[in-house]
Amino acid sequence: MSREPTNHELIVEKHTRNLRDGYHVWSHDKTDVERALGDYRWTGEMILGTYYQAEHGRPPDNGLEYRVGASGGGFDVLDFNWLPEEKWLAETEGVDVSISLNRRGKGREITIPIPIYGGGMSFGSISEQVMLARAIAAKKWSTFFSTGEGGYPSSLVPFKDHIITQVATGMFGVREETIQHAPIVEFKYAQGAKPGLGGHLLGDKATSSVAALRESVPWVSLFSPFPFHSVYSVEDHRKHVDWIKTTNPEALVSVKVSTPTDVDMVAVGSYFAGANIIHLDGSYGGTGAAPEIAKKNIAMPIEFAVPKVHKYLLGENIRDEVVLMASGGIRSADDIAKIVALGADGAVMGTSELVALGCTRCSNCERGRGCPFGLTTTDLLLSEFVSPEWGAERISNLYQSYEFQLKDILRKLGLSSIRELRGRKDLLVYRGNGRK
Ligand code: SF4
Image (cartoon, rainbow, N blue to C red; front, top):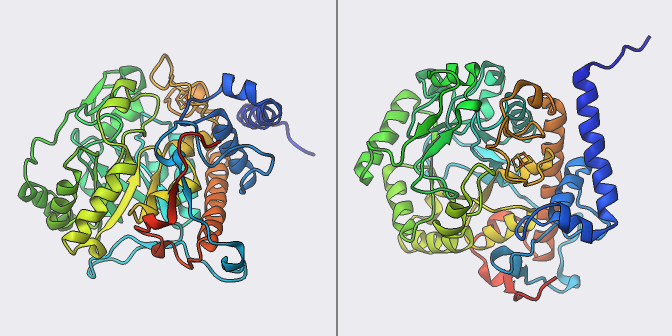
């Protein structure tokens, strides 16, 4: 005898149905799509295209423009310099999209089969269910996701081999055992969406479980100051890296920085301090909690920062010893391939994973009880909208679609590996503002 569905299952089913029905209704009327959803960067079509990929594991085939937005700049005016069709690699030829995260020639070797991992979103800024969904998907794809600042609940311990532990200025959730568990430790020196502003978790989101992990008082706002007051030089940074290497000699170290005009010098300093990964976070990332005025006016767009840093690292003859990851406004497989062609090794995804889970880009992450879809909230009832298994399947499907598209792009450029695409700006063309 079949049992009655639980409340939780009914909620999840309703949420899934809403996403699917929304896709079908909206996909027939693009005017409504544009009115109802998104903005110039994340257009309604792009959001719906991401929902589709999260549902089906492949790109939409119904005319939705899922590859680029309508910002009139950056990724949206770049296209690929495709080879004539007769020169494309055959579909039977293998195309490799894996990248190594350690190029220093010593220490732990970590290769991820797709050139992406999940970016930092803390427990408190997102729910435990969303964290678990990201963890399950990361494990399935043998890649990683970052905890953001604040540690992670015990339910995530089984996934520790796929979790990047973040150390940020507030040191929330940073404990000896979390460093010892971590295959990769990420120092967050700044965030592209709000450089110079540090972090702020509203009191409403600092529930007792969040506060317990952060060793703070429940329902009291938390601030992570800017900058690290222990780091004002490369030598100071070196001490930070030494601290991690002493606690966990096997861990790789990633350094997450925003994109000021001297970002190339910051990257070189990070390399000489011992970092394995330099993670550049451009200005267009962040959830709806990041202030718009900061997102639009402070850091450099990632499309400018990556080629600048890539060129500088080449000039210093250290480009092949460090991994350059990029985030902050990378929304699609096309964006991933474009940022690699501009000089990155891979991309760090955040918002697109939330969109896969139903985010509409409404910017209400910090209002009231938090996200009405249960994403950027710690409200117990709202969090129930996302079951970890459902969420993991959607993120995993999105990754599958990205993998498919990246291989397709490489084949059409005559390349058999994503590593051959790095820094190939000659394979990009400017389409101008008039592109559709
Ligand atoms: S409140 Fe939820 S749906 Fe709205 S932008 Fe934030 S995560 Fe997305």
